[in-house]
Amino acid sequence: MTDWSISTLALSDWPKAQTPRLQSEKTEALIERILEWLTPAQKVGQIIQADIASVTPEDVAAYHLGSVLNGGNSAPNGNQRASLADWLELADAFWAASMRADGPRIPILWGTDAVHGHNNLIGATVFPHNVGLGATRDAELVERIGAATAREVRASGMDWAFSPTVAVARDSRWGRAYESYSESPQLVAELSAALVRGLQGISGNENFLGDTKILACAKHFIGDGGTHGGRDQGETIATEAELREVHAAGYYATLEAGVQTVMASFSSWGGRKMHGHKAFLTDLLKAHWGFDGVVVGDWDGHGQIEGATPTDCPDALMAGLDMYMAPDSWKGLHASLLRHLESGRISQERLDDAVRRVLRLKMRAGLCTQPTPSERALAVRGNIVGCTAHTELAAVAVQKSAVLLKNANNVLPLQSNQRILVTGPAADDLGMMCGGWSLSWQGGNLNPTDYPHAETFLAGIRRVGQEHGGTIIYSPDGRIKDSPDIAIHVFGEPPYAEFRGDLSTLDFQPRDKKDADTLKRLRKAGIPTICIFLSGRPLWVNPSLNASDAFIAAFLPGTQAGALADVLFATNGLDFSGKLSFSWPQYADQYALNMG
Image (cartoon, rainbow, N blue to C red):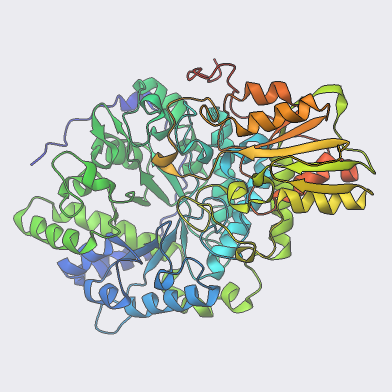
């Protein structure tokens, strides 16, 4: 058996987290009574989360599973474009299975990757990714986005969002850089706490985890934004002091805001995977900081611990993991955990502590007193997902997150009665505007019917341009017979998520020069050109910057991207208020690019 008794942290150097004290004697007493009559198999079931693509309601009933999730590519009947009614029907089926009379009648907990709105559901409001929200520097706006997301998730029968990501990204080559608010630990702390308040409500208030709220999850604990070379799931290169002062900033803040779950990171520190790092999961997070919620794993992350597999990993539980995310490995894991309990490899005390935390989480979320998902208040209303109030909020976020990097000769704002050429396939590509984690894990290939309320850049420019008496011409390759007064070129990164987005260089399109060629052609023709750049991170785009008259970093704005047109025309006195939350590279190999 692995010896987890030696801590590698100087805990006395770590500040205490101001974690709210939410326990009640009545609830704790009820939890202890439930623990007394749960069987070993039922206890093990409660600490396992399975993916809906690999588990049925019948499985939930037979194995007494505590939680399900829908991964980035999972949906009812395998249909990523499943309707809201389909999601609610499946949520009802899982809930009913968990509440069968022949089982412990502990309601199922459903988690989803709602990382920029309820992004896995057609028709939902997709907000800008965190990299853009960081540029708004507006905590009140982020809190409102959290509240809107909570309402849409709740309306679809789910209980738990795996957000916010509180990583402090140190190398923009990282494929998850767009999930980070900033390179500034202080800004990450401020905005991540705001999102938690929006999702869960304010701890101690009546609305905390009420009927319009859901559980939040601070992730990925700890140091995921500091891996060597920006390699996803790699080794975090940081001293303990850097972990404490930089990478822990979002955890101090979200714990103070009352976050109820924390997700372990795929990454390592000191050569040990975080899923098996007792010094962090137990000694720091639970003992030193007083966290009494649930530590959940990431997608089969426990299987990356040395000597473990996705179906056999007792060390993660003993290190402090409370719920295994075992999407397709859950059945084998259930059997092996029972064997390890019988052999003494895992202790009854540690298992009971994990189950106690899961039960506490469900009771705090009000699951034990809720009706079936389709009968809950927001689901019954039926007019929450993609509602006007939420899309208007998303439009404000788009406008506030755009950053003007260049405006030579004051070509902006656009003038009335101009003949405007819009170029670039990205101008009307909703998938590029939303990025990864948008209907599917990697994003892309979105249809206008997926989000009927959506407005692309092209649609927005047409809307506002025509209001100002302008003529809008769209040519994806920028070739037209008659010269326009001005051109708007929209381009950027294709959608990606996680490790598939890792880069070896910050050079944008090092082998593909079609966008640079378009800009050179426009410049040679003497046409003033505005660039709108879509990306999940700052990239070296000097050729495009030099060839343009104005350059806007729009990041990944989501379904209301067209709202940027109001800023381009300065409608209602709007102006660019976004400020970079990440340093912009001067050179393509400038990887150490953080403040200071």
